[in-house]
Amino acid sequence: MPARKEGLILGIETSCDETSTAVVRGGDEVRSLIISSQADLHARYGGVVPELASRAHLEALLPAVEEAMHEAGVGYGDLDGVAVTHGPGLIGALLVGLTAAKAISFALDIPLLAVNHLEAHIYANFLHFPELEPPLVAFVVSGGHTLLVHMPAHRSYRVLGETLDDAAGEAYDKVARFLGLGYPGGPVIDRLSRQGDPHAVPFPRALMHDGTYNFSLSGLKTAVINHVRKLRERGEDVPVEDIAASFQAAVVEVQVHKVTRAAREVGVSRVILAGGVAANRYLREKLEEALKGKAIGLYYPPLELCADNAAMVAALGWRLLKDGELSPLDVDAAAVLPLGSGLGRMTGNSK
Ligand code: KG4
Ligand code: ZN
View 1: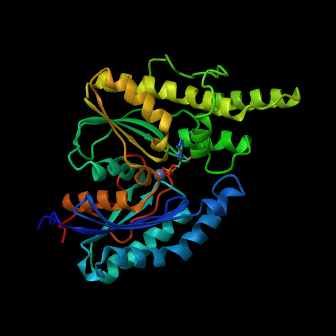
View 2: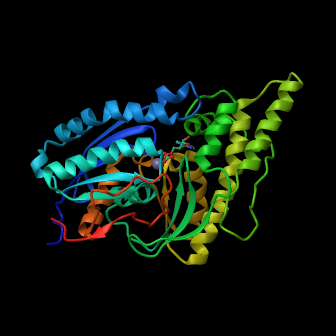
View 3: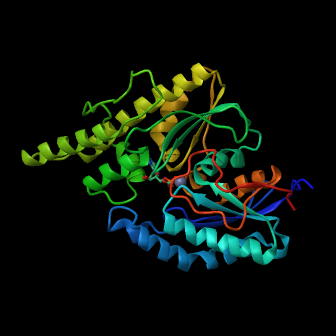
């Protein structure tokens, strides 16, 4: 029997430093969303410490499941499936969520729906814009990934380009750490940039005109660090706002150029942003400006759904259930999991 439209899915996300649970009905109605961030725990280290993350997930997860169920006003007997991120991410962190989801699936005898985290970020858009449909170009920018993807149909992906070194969020975090701005770096740099001059320092725009859809940010990161070191050595002031704005302009200019070119060359009329860096105000504005002139629509989720969250996991889980793509109870967690691959997924009848 195909899944009912009203399928009620419990979502679980523990791939990095957010413990999140959600109950979503029918793939687009968020009944509850709980996000417990560990950012404060990791801030003093300037990045996520995997062991601390796993332990914190272990403490936070079951209360977060209870809270999501309570807030949604549903009972465990009402659930049609449990969706969980099984990769890519920190292996210990993933295992906490995956093990809990397996136990819930087994105890309630409901389908286990193992979800790819990157695909879930993409599906945050379909969750928020139920009318949105492929074909489209998706730009996935997170702490661990930069992927430019052609999506001709639902759940179908052709990677056009990716980063050759640092991911977008990773570059923001590293530059922020060097400037002493704390973790995560993206939101701080985004905020400080508003008071800075994006033309103050002409940082390099790597691979801008190389004809590919790839990205490279490690040279830019080094250029920022060298620039700041030189100022410090000379005993000059470090104008943090100008440096943040100039760094961000260098990142975003290449992104806008390549995403716009991809949309035009592939011939789609819709572009979506996905992942934590999709929250970036400058990227949204500049891309919107560039695409508007070409009659291409830009979509991005609200802030809460850009960051790691279990609502996007549940939304994608609903689609897997509908497609009959259930996971066996021995499905593994995977630190590396390419977009579109479902490890150990089996096709069967949904409940
Ligand atoms: O998708 P996400 O929450 O976690 C991963 O799957 O990696 O992305 C987190 C990344 C962090 O690197 C963070 O600094 C970045 O997203 N980020 C931002 C902004 N908000 C979060 N980067 C740029 N501008 C922002 N406003
Ligand atoms: Zn993410």
